[in-house]
Every structure is written in structure tokens, then in C-alpha cells.
Amino acid sequence: MASVGGRAHAVTGGEDGAVRVWDLEAGEEVRELGRHEGAVRCAAVASVGGRAHAITAGNDATVRVSDLLTGAGTAVLCLPESPQELTVAADGTLVVALADTLVALEPGSDLPPFLPWDSVTRV
Image (tube, rainbow, N blue to C red; front, top):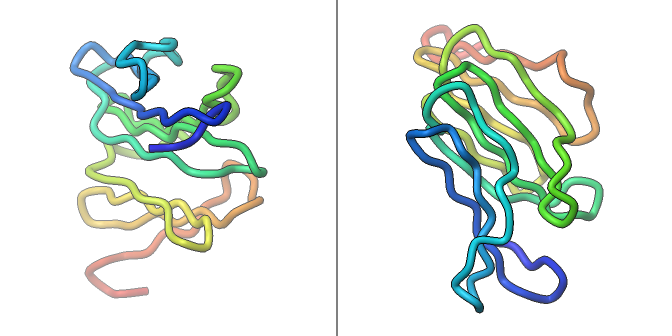
């Protein structure tokens, strides 16, 4: 959930690949942010550069970042496989879980590079 224009908004993703923004006070869809090529597996909302953004991961092995206010896509991260989960840490680091690997992207870094973390070797 994020505040956009002083109103509470949420982001959802579906089997059809669509990413939608909802005004929770009005109970209405505000806009569709775009689509993954395949189902959306997970979604989060985070502040990027002081603005609310949707961060979604899909079966198309991409993570997509979109500005909630304008609807503009701001970044796409291509992964070697479909992500299982994603979260944004308190410091703004994006963490994406793949089958056996965690991918961490620090705030302000370019896409890519990213820092892979192997859950088996813990390196």
C-alpha cells in the first residue's frame, strides 16, 4: 500500500499478466501499469527517488518498476529464471528470490548489475 496524491493505493497482479493500481478509498481501479508476458507472481510498493513505485515480478523472468503517479515504466530487470518472491528491505534494497539464488539490487544502482547470493554456499 502507498499514498499517491494523499490517497491510499494498492497494486495487484494477475494470471493475465496485468498490473493494476487501485484507489482503496474509492474502491476503484486507477490504471493498468502494463503487463508481464505471463502471470504476475508477486508485487510490492516502494519509494524510489521519493516517489511511490510498483515493483512486480512475473513468470516472464522479469522484474518491472513503474511510477504509481504517472504510470510510466521506469526499469526492467531480466532474470535467468522466473522469480519466486520479492521484497524491498527497509534500506531500499530490492531482494528477489529465484529457485536457489537471491538477487539483491541496492538503491540507486543501475539495472544490471546485481549482486547474486547463492543460498547453498551462502556467498
